[in-house]
Image (cartoon, rainbow over all chains, first blue to last red; front, side, top):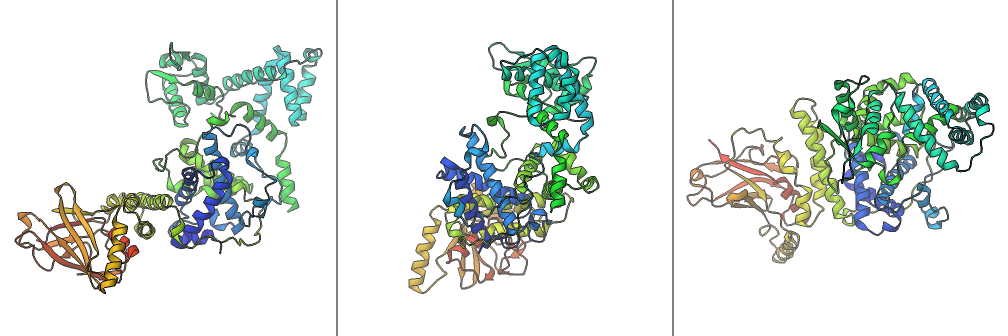
Amino acid sequence: MPFTAYDLRYNLQDTFPKLCAYLQQRAKRWLDSFAYDSDEVDIVVEHVIEQLTRLGLLGGGDHAPETALDRLNNAQFYAFLNQSVKNKAIDRLRRHRLLTSSLSAFENPGNLEEENDPLNTVADSIWGSPPFPTPETAALQAASQEELRILIKYCIEELSSAPRQLLAVIQELDEMGIGDLVQELKEKFHPQLADVELSHLSQHKDHAHKKLRHCLQHNSTNLAVLVALRLTEYGQYSTGFDEISVDFKTLVNERISEEEMLKGLNHLARVGLLDWHGEEIVRISPVQLKHLARFYEEGE
Amino acid sequence: MNKQHDELANIRNEDLLLAQWLLQILVTTPQQELPTFTNKGGQFQEEYHREFYWQLPDFVQALLNNATQEELIRFGPLVFHLIGCPTCHTAYLEIYDAMRATIGIDEARPLTSTLPHSTATTSTHILVYMCQLLIHQAAGILSEAHYGHSNNVSWARSLLQQAIYLSSHVMQGTQRQRALQDLVEVATFFDSTTTPAAHSYLPVFSSTGGSRQRKIKRRAETLGRPNELAAINLQSGLSKQVGTITQNLDMLELHLEELGQDLRGQFLLITIPFGSLLEPVRWIGGNPLAIRSKIPVGEEGSLTTPLGSTDLQLSNLEDYNLLEAMFIKLDVRTAE
């Protein structure tokens, strides 16, 4: 007999072996070449049971509040578990640097054994694709689009002094189906773009993206974004070390007071972009620098 | 259904595409640098916030169902918390992705695969981890209750009971010790006694305990005396005081040796913090936190006194493990 979320909540002792067996089977499926590494399988299974315990489901009885997980039908619940296992397995594979492209590399549609597996009851959604590809996209969607659109447009227009980069971005937007904005930009910059030919598209696109990131950060009213920008602008590579450092006092300017800088640095440290605990010298790793250059938040 | 599909299609407007593009140039990180969900090698040191954590599935479901702003308002505190808490934020991302996979799945054909019914086939490592998780969660709940933030003691008790029952299926002594290692700390929440204990005993988990017990069982069955040879060995920290718990028919008996001069001739009060966790034991005096010894400590520093009766049998491996877990901490002090 399969188990249910209800069983896990009210009868953990009897159901736990079944849960483990199912998670192990899924872990072996998604761990690919590490399927027979029992340590890796255990890590994946442990992660999922930890999540379920924290959510109050495992052994929660009447004490832990009911959540949306309790209201999933059985097929949905198995799909939830399967996806949780898959995500952690991919995370482990990434750690082993085996995953270099997209997640689809791990999917094997021709695997008959997998298709016949009665445990694999996950079906395609009858609603088609999910509403948002990532949670961040959902968050962005929820935010005011109008203001952001104006800002993006402004930053794209700033590229007009580099027509090849502007054209590269326009082409990119066109390919994505952002027709209205593309039309608007083409009309406005028709003279500059008239004779431009693109030979090294990806190079121009990369340069354009870099400028756009800088422009978006520079025009942001979000304190943490401005602090991130200052760090990327004023950070200096330390001699002999693979590390960037910048004096706290250098970061303070007429736009950002000392108090605000402290607040901004603390925020960046809290979200994991910095290892800073109030030191006079802010030290940044090259990876952190890359993330700071891409950091952007909505709002003040 | 079509109406819902149309609504979803309308969301995929130009603004969303623009937002996706913005994300692509801003927040896309190289694959190997993506945050990992856990990096603890079997430990769970990341603190999470239970109150918010529980709301995540409902919040995610509301987002996936395109809940109205009015419906989302109740999650306002959670949203603000997620901004500042990397642990809960990571969990949110995980749960979002996993719940997204459930959209639109109707109840499908029943699963027919055979799944095991016994913990015998479950990895010991995972069983141990599950016990640790349950105890860890119980400790968090008791800690909150201790500081007056909640009153969920019965929940914590339930989690500890489940941990102890699961640990009884772990046959290797060292692994069982690992599974229950945090129980001693949790025991302090159950012991309201203010007088310091003269001695505090812990069971000696032996890696050979299982095989020894099996031998005992075999010998005992042969002899037709099932209980008298099986014993839980106790040791009192660095002071090396030793003791044992044996069973005479259904009566559990405590034997202590080498007790100090100050305890000789005195009646002892025995405290078993987890004594009330497992119901099958009927304690002498009815209170496992204050069991008065039947006789005083002898002149040679030894004491034998009954503790309570139970249907559990020390000669049975799983019963033995349950009782051993219950005696994870045993304190003695003078009765006066």
